[in-house]
Image (tube, rainbow, N blue to C red; front, side):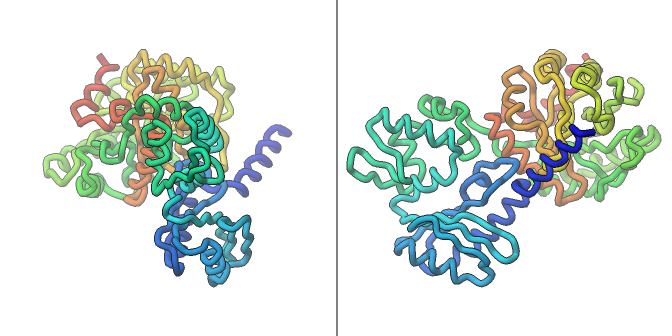
Length: 435
């Protein structure tokens, strides 16, 4: 009980310090648009943790470009309606807090120095330290948000100029975490996945369980968005509290999916299910019924209190089921509200790679599970990764953008992502385990 209380206190403190990425990104864009209209400002750019795509954001940073004196721009900011607090940190930086509660750090720079300033305002501490060391080894000085060669100032109108001067490729913001990207950029970074690489949108809930749209809606919306296929994955029958599907429900849905595909309304609909992994690792459906799905996402939705050994064995048993295609939201975390349960990731990744079972990046901004730090480890173990929207409404389909960001932070390319494959490749992967 004492441990649970302490964990609750820690979560409360975290919740008052951090914001979820989608909330922070929306807030940052509103502030950016407002600050971009200030007299003398030619460009406003969101930087910091939002630009790096961190799942939890402590502070919002916005870089303003002007060819006027920075102090003039800061004075204009202080006069903005709704500004509750204004604290100038130096001649080019200030922290502002609005009466509505939003706050951010503002950095003002001339266009000739934008690259170095934006780089400093975006990169993690580890990334910046490594750049400073590399600059020194090449006869440069990267300090004071400026690049110098000896005593000569080097203009940096964009970040690519800085990286190029240091003999590096441009490092995408998502990678700037000090986890090997500086060394890799000196030799060649891999191509990272982009949203346009996704050919299918999977992990979608319809009105058959707890979603708000129909199968036909899903086909139309995903088709208009450019996806070739979409995977319906409503909850299984053991999840009665969210309208889990009985066998009769499933056969009705399959019939509707066949009709929808025959009508050619848009994206091709795949027959999937998000099956509960029961406490003993079983899925709660017969093998005969499971064999009728195009793919199966297996997820834990209860009994979070199992210890690491029990939970690991629960997953290993599910992985051994030949009908399982993907493990959904592997650690069960809800950011700022529920801790991840403990499992032996090495054993799970090894078994998943052996059995040909993928692991999901659940793109719901409250989950973003599997954690991108672990996704990279899973990739290195040979596990294929899916990016699942976990959409329960048309708006939820846009979650996939955050899943792509997490995949990029994990250094994933299109070749590592299951639903970047065409539908035939996706089906082939799903059928591999069954064979």
